[in-house]
Image (tube, rainbow, N blue to C red; front, side, top):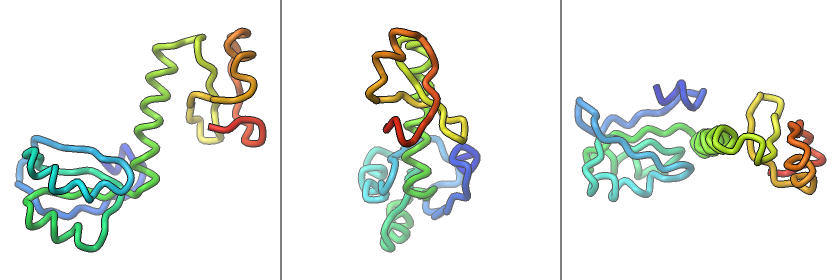
Length: 130
């Protein structure tokens, strides 16, 4: 399921229990939070990357560690936030569509123009920055 959400393979360090009930997510390089995950009673921690010792820490702490890539784990949260903002603030926030169809809130010089006109702002890497 995690690989489907991230759109890429996920490396599993199988250190936790057979039945997974409590899962934590820390985007980017969050394997350093394994101690906290274990202290909170989590069965698994999903993050982007970790250091070499993260593998051994996960095994010793009894927590599954799922490593999905630094960039991939950071962008799915931003995408979810952008979708939420677009849905809850229709016609209030400008947004852009990049070449992959990803809608995101645009902070750009033309933001006020887009808000006032209620039009969609198409992604133009040279004109807008996120």
